[in-house]
Structure formats: C-alpha cells, structure tokens
Image (cartoon, rainbow, N blue to C red):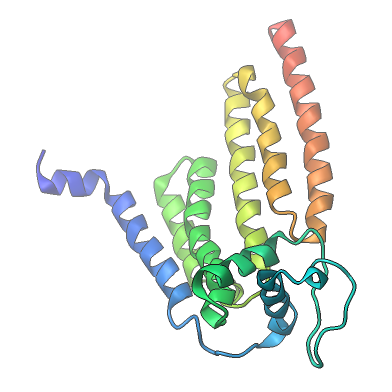
Amino acid sequence: MSSNSLLYKYRFEILLFFVLIFSFGSKLYRLEVPKTYYFDEVYYAFTAQEMAKGNKHAWQNTGYPPEDFAYEWTHPPLGKELSALGIKIFGDNAFGWRFFQAFFGGLGALLIYLVAKNLFLSKGVGLIAAVLYSLDSFLFVLSRITMVDIFMVDFLLLASLFVIKYARSRKKRDYSRAPRCRLNGAVYTYGYFLPESLFFLSITMKSANRIQKTAHTLNRLQI
C-alpha cells in the first residue's frame, strides 16, 4: 500500500492527532501566567495547597484561613484533590495548581470527538466537534484556572459516550450489555467533585435500573 493510500485511509486520525496537539498545547502554553492567584483561585488553589500539605481544615468546615483567603469546603472534594496532586508532582506553583485542569481541558477534545463520532456515525462530524471544542474560548478559560468545572465537562462527555454506546447496543437487541449502563452512573460518581453531580448521579442510577429491568423483560419475552 502506497504512502498516499495510507494517508488517505487514516486522514481523520491524522487530523485528529494535530487537533489534539493544538488542544493540549493551547491549554498548557504559559500555564504558569499569572504566577499569583486570580479570580476564584483564592479559594480553590489555596485549598488545594492546604490539601497537599495535609491540612485537615481543607476538608472540614473548621479552622480559620489567612486574611483574603478562604477554604473551599464543597464536598466531595475530588476536583481540589486533583489540583493537590498537581502540586505534589510539579511543586507549589501556578503550573502545579492548574496542570490537571489544562490536561482535562485538552483531553476533552478527544472525548467530544468520540461522542460525536458515535452519535452521528461519522469521523468527519467527530473531527468538526473536536475542532470547535478546541477553539471554544469558555472552555479555554476553564482549562487554565484552578477551578473544578472542566473536570465536570469531561466526566459528562464520558457519561454521554457510555449512554450512546448503550443505546447503540440496545438497538441491536444486545441485552447482555444491559448491566454496563451502570458504568454511566460510575462516571458520574467520579464526577462527584461538584454537589450538583450528586443530583445527576441519583437520576442516572435510577434510570439505569429501569433500563436494565426493561431489557431483561424484553429478553425473556424474546421481543
């Protein structure tokens, strides 16, 4: 097979590779600027720093923070713990505070590609979705600040991907995959760093139970 044939065959994958390079690169470039807190980092970055130090007040609504700072006590705390992990790996600096936000922001381009490709059964549509995601200014900002919203975006995209894949298997009457719809609820569990996620989790788990019961019923009736 000629090189031109290979390039044509994998053209979407090659283009996606460059989109992902841009997505990750744009999120990581000069991530350490500014070197000081801005906007809600006085809550999230500060709390992540205290978590990295093992300060129990970062998890509990006790203690008194320094003047002009505040502990971000929203539970469960996964998003802030990811920021604390970044501090552990890269040091207590602006890059360390924001690294995992930038990583998840870049990863979102791949996730939305998979969502769109599976939803529309088209690699081209998936590629367009990834490009639009990579150029979105709001997602760009959320990927470069120590907050937790970008984590929620990725987990919602991943949960949506599982829903689409389950719906495709349901359409093919593959009832053996019914229990896998619970994985969707598990993804929401991993997205529990925001209180709103608990609401979505409860709805998702109830829906998963109903879908599974319906699938088993249809399977028994051989419909």
